[in-house]
Image 1 (spheres, one colour):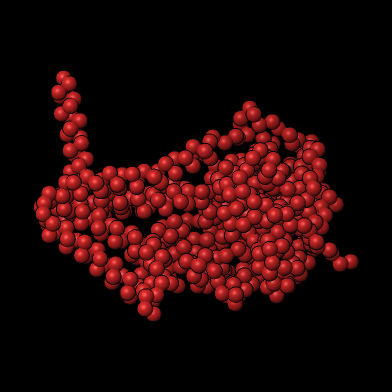
Image 2: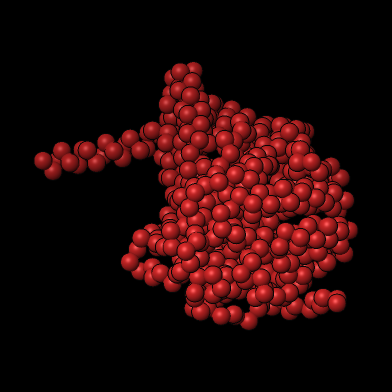
Length: 520
């Protein structure tokens, strides 16, 4: 019996040494590795199609080369060479893009693709001329590729272990109802419309030369209160919205936060906030809209509006494509290829704007959260809502030229202003009970100075609470006012504070005082 077990162990070891598993691990690693690096922004399912396609093509190449050379191990080594050639080219190009040798810029496709292909070709010739067997080399590559493949898996697994715990819901016994509605009429629908990165009127004028006063005047005529000196509490979306919907500053969520800590731990606070849970305990149904940052979409809401999509690539697939040899085609067709990544945002935003016109018709009290990626880049909307494509250098951080950036921003601001003036009257007129509507930015923009990062548009339609709003309000106090006024709570106000934090140092806060004054 012991001998039988021993033979079985040896046979498994031999299989591992002989079967060219490395070809499949190397074909999967770039996809899983990219997923691991971006796991805070994307769901694992977004890599599924790319992974299946990569493994399928690798299998076809392996079987084809096996049929040609009559040797599984040689076929596996040649397949792995092709995989490495394809998946490493885009990264190699970014690394060498600005490098010159003897005055020759080698980081150009015309040179680099030839040189890299020649190196891989010579490696293939060496394998073909090498004396057999290839067993030892296969074994080494199997071990190396297995370890390589497992590294991002640990990263992904750790993320889910730390951050994707079962969230609290209004059905949990731990959720205590704090809101009450004592009137005979139905409670008001609550709309929170985030116009991502929409700066305050003074910033629009001084930095971009845009006069949004006609838009603000039209909102005031509808009954909105405009907070002319409003500031955001934070300069990052997940921090800002989490604070707003939990009626507290971030430091109250966790006792110790490292300055460079990742933001993923905030996801349960972002998706299952106090505001959402309390409104749902009162019988509200939550309605949300899709946007390109899928991690930030409340995908378990009662209604999730999502456009039917297009035949374009997802942002993750487009990013993956740019790391491969397909980068040559992507760069040669820059205008068309950029459309692959940005058009999804255009479609989702346009669809959300269309559906906002009809949401008031849904029966029963509603909590509607619409996070619209406009006027934030990418700039995909023309003045009349047509799709536009303003090129930028993705390798430099998606940076537009100053002229293109102002043009795209101006188009986006003018278009969303026009759409809001169409949508908001429909919501107000179509509501049985006067609704609560907040139209506000989550943060500003550092254009023209770091202090502008917290200067935001903030407009409030809440007839019963109008007198409670004030010029220098920050979002952390918005639902404190609304809940105290409409739903018989006693939260009171917190001191208004605004904090700037840089990329990668999300919790290294620099307080930004509010120096705004409103002319009489």
